[in-house]
Amino acid sequence: MVRLTHLQMGWLWDSRPRVPEWFERIQARPSFKAGIGDWLNEKYLPLMAEKGSEAAEAARDGGLGTAPHPSRRPLSRRPPQDEEFFLTRSFLPPQAFSS
Image 1 (tube, rainbow, N blue to C red):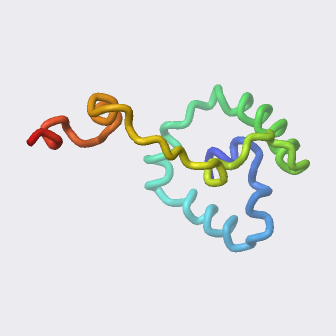
Image 2 (image 1 turned 30 degrees about the vertical axis):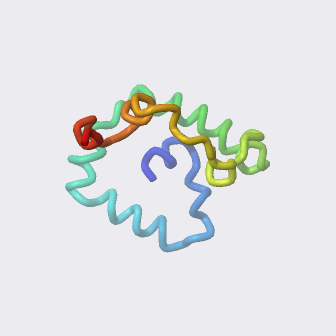
């Protein structure tokens, strides 16, 4: 939410009146300052505001691009090419596949 706020996208939760109240309470916590506030790079905020305003305008107009949402893209039905192909794209170590 912090990033969205910096990108001028706070309007996304305008229809949810309790969200801004919750966010204000979160920002008042000491842990927010330690975990988020102390790590912000202030020199990027003007750029984020500028680019965010441009994106917000496009989002409100419904013109954020023509690519379908990832959940609406067809899934690939191709099986892995071979064991090496599969192993290089797996989270499991190669020994998990040895007999």
